Length: 267
Image (cartoon, rainbow, N blue to C red; front, side):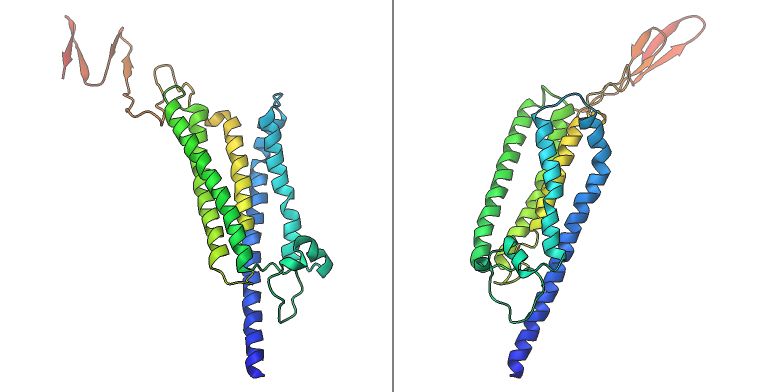
């Protein structure tokens, strides 16, 4: 009898710590999502709502932005409120519950079996493969066109696309690992799912806003006699200075002037 009670106690303690950790990670995700929205709201108003241009990009941006903001609300209720059993069945059907718990838990059972974890691993792996394919194709096309479009939109797309892919690669891989290595019936299976979805929404919105932000475009004139070197160029731009006496010299030339004649000496 004592052994059975110890097993139940151990299971309950593991379940409680797992749920607490899972909820903390979800709270981090929600904080990132809504804090970033507050930071970029004025940019959104400036570059989208004040602009007279309406395009497919605008529609896709609004869908990604606001579905990403409203979609996590049911998930937050699932994580942080004590929903009745009938309400939890809308989230997780009874036939998908891993195993009945040997103790009472007031909340939705988010645990998954190993078979469910394998199926979700395949789904998340397919999304990772899709992101990788898009990134490689974008990289190849950007390298082909870099001489025709120095700086500007192409460079911003490549820079932000690289950051997006790097972060999403780490998030997807960590999420897949949780599906594979955590034990059956654990709430920790797929614990990075909410954070990965939030990062995808946030980074996509940031990328589109940066493309609309003229302050980030590199192909701007910095001055009459100064040319900005693009990050795509493989050579280093040489700086020149002008001497306002009717001649133009590069560094390495000095002028000697006296009252009788003027000559130029090369040093």
